Length: 80
Image 1 (tube, one colour):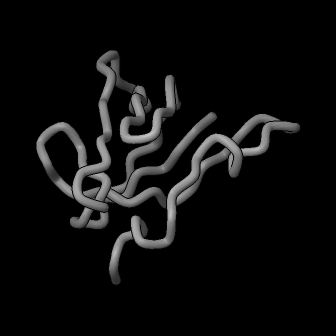
Image 2: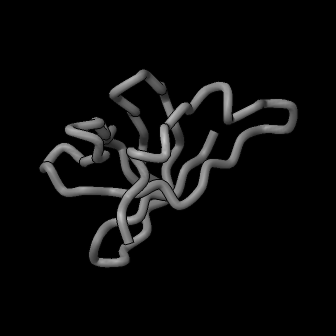
């Protein structure tokens, strides 16, 4: 599965999802050898530095139901 991560600066990062947990998502950003751990902290997703991030999109392989893998209540969506 792939994801596009959106930072407050409007920077977008395309990444390959390695694992999804209830409060942690581990990804490998495109053109990077390092992994990135995103954490759910107090209702907001943040990167390893504590910078808030949003998920612009998740793209799964055909036949994979992303909704069953990623359950994020509306309260966890980033505010505009």
